[in-house]
Length: 331
Image (cartoon, rainbow, N blue to C red):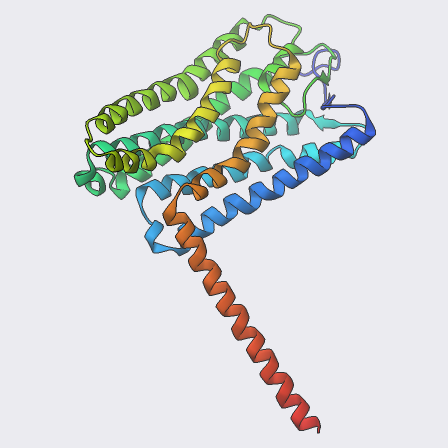
């Protein structure tokens, strides 16, 4: 289909969060620090899982995938947002907008599906602990992760194609911090019934269905925990799920509220908060939630820091030895 100047645009202008210069500098510092913490936290989780053989378990395999998704998701939009805080004209090309939309939808959908796979992993760990390693075999773990990635990519491809085909009749002012589905759809100058159907169908596939699976898994988990007679046993069983349950509660609630009702009167400002929550807050908090509540992760971190301190000591001793030899020869 031929793109005409009065129907499609070559670039979009993002209005961002504020037009005040001082506010933008403050937001740059705030979100820049959050982005660095996200990179550090998720990168550290990936490093620990790869290096420590004690973490080569199904639970940490999914956590590794989740950290990779968080790293890619936050990097798909936050660097551009940070750059725009320091720029007068916040523009993004049509092609780059479509690319950003594709990756944000793909990675967001993949994360929701991975959380459902992790819920099944916790269900097996609590309800069938003796067969845990047999049921959660490497083949099944890889299959669940692969399905999560593939479904997320396929869903994103469909939704991005349907969204970016909409003509805007010259309107290119996006009241948002990034290219986001609902923000682009609002600019359309044609009937958007198909887009609304696709948004709802997409939400069912990557949000509602995984949320139902998570709820079902935790219903069985709670029933199994209640059958444990000792208080210590209940705490231990609940402790294996606490981190995942916290992340699930944060991730599903706001997304379901936003994307399951595209005809709602939700404001553009509310959409911005949702996107910032998933692009900045959630990826930053996930490593903290899993590391602070997990003894194995903390033990792996202590082991890594111990090796680093030993390595630093050896380097220092070598430098001192070399310095003393050089000084002796010079004398």
